[in-house]
Structure formats: structure tokens, C-alpha cells
Length: 260
Ligand code: NAD
Image 1 (cartoon, helix red, strand yellow):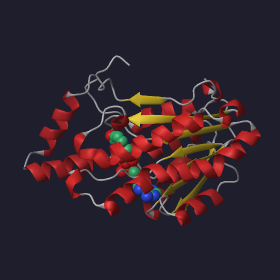
Image 2 (tube, protein in one colour):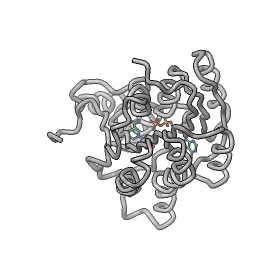
Image 3 (cartoon, helix red, strand yellow):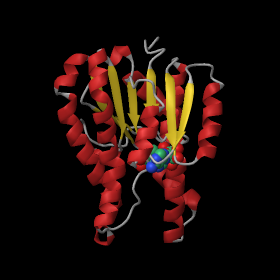
């Protein structure tokens, strides 16, 4: 299926690795021009090289922390116009809410709620004036089924999800702009592996035992791949998905046990 977005410009945040990279890859394959960001330049350049080899859209890079005003300004400046915005940043650490002070909360809110809101604010009106826009917020399955130890993520991402539910249905909806959440369950990325590694270290258990145990909880009996995450993201950005807005699409191999 031709997604009808070749030649559009996309800003894909936090995209040198993992899910953001998967999204950038799928968009470039569709002929979308992308600006990808990440904090470290080395991994970013390596990813840019791989994306350019796909021979799809143009690939630009911006090294910087997307959770800072400077990082966001640099990312926006590199994109001639933002037709597609994929919001993403590193997730907050796990822990016990009794240990989190105001600073820990502000950091999580900055990264996983206020940064996407700032980027939506900076781009959504221009999208509406051009009559086309796609915003995909990478959040987490924790928005639907909160995970006890990920309280910072549960809170910050739920705040973003509530905000977006309103904005997506506001004036921009009638002007060709869609805003959706894409909720990853367990995907085989650096984040999942390092999280499992720290859990193994903390509990004195073997990495492989924990990895297999987690895998058994997923009905499809495997972890998701960044490529399949990217494919769904690209579809949400397609012209065909113009009637799909204000939704939260869970991509978790069936792990969420509810009917809806
Ligand atoms: P990852 O660690 O594999 O990749 C993260 C990417 O984001 C890297 O390119 C890194 O350089 C970049 N990045 C991190 N913080 C940044 C910042 N402040 N500014 C710019 N770039 C930054 O992680 P992932 O697994 O792809 O996860 C992406 C998001 O999805 C995270 O918020 C994570 O919490 C969430 N998530 C992931 C899973 C999963 O199973 N992988 C599940 C639920 C939620």
C-alpha cells in the first residue's frame, strides 16, 4: 500500500536506537524526509548512514537533548516544515514512589509529558494551516495497564494522554491533523535489555531466566521488534489514517488482558 506521504517532512525524536529508529526507518522507506535526533552523535550518525542506504527520503540529524528548550529549538530548525511529528524520549527509571522527590517528578514530566506538549504546540497550527498533519506520541502500555515500579512513567505519560485526548478533538481535527498515542508493550530494544539486566543484578537472578519469564507473559511468545513498531507508526502517519485520531493504539503481542 502506498501510504501517500512521500516528500513530507518528519521530525522523529530520540531516534538513533530502538522504537524511534524503527519509526524513522519505516517513514524513510515511504519516501518521507526525516530529521532524527538523539543525545549522542555517534549512534545518531551510524543510524543516519543506515537510513540513507535505504534510498528513500532525505535524512538530517540533530544531536541534542530533546527534553531541553535548546534541543527542541535545534530539532525544529533543522526541519523545513513539520508535517509529521513522532514524539519520543528516554523513559524514566523504575523505583519506589517513596524515594522520588520533586526533582525526579519534574524530570519525568519534562521528558514524557511537557516535551511532547511543547513540540505539539510548536508545530500543530502550521500543520492545520496546510491541511495535513500527523502526530504520533510514543508512550507506553503502562498508560492502559500501569506497572507498579514505573510510577514516574505511569504518571507522566497518563498526563500527556489526557492532554492529547482534548487537543486531538479540538479545532485541528477538522483541518487534517491527527494525534494518536502508540503504546509499546515489551519490545526487544536496548531499554528492555538494560532494564532486565538491572533487575537481574538487583535480584541476583540470571538475565536469561528473567528474559524468558517475561516472554512467557506475552501471548505471541516473543518480544516485538522496532521494525514492526515503525510499520504501525508509518500507517498512523499515512493519508489512509486520516479518520483515526485521539486514539491510543496498544502494540503488545496481546499482553493486555482486557476485552477493550
Ligand atoms: P532505547 O533506549 O532503545 O532508545 C532510546 C533512544 O532515545 C535512543 O536513540 C536515545 O539516544 C534516545 N534518547 C533518549 N533520551 C533522549 C533525549 N532526552 N533526547 C534525545 N534523544 C534521547 O529505548 P526504546 O526501547 O526505543 O524506548 C523508547 C521509548 O518507549 C521510551 O520512552 C521507553 O520508556 C518507551 N517504552 C519502551 C518499551 C520497550 O519495550 N522497549 C516499552 C514501553 C515503553
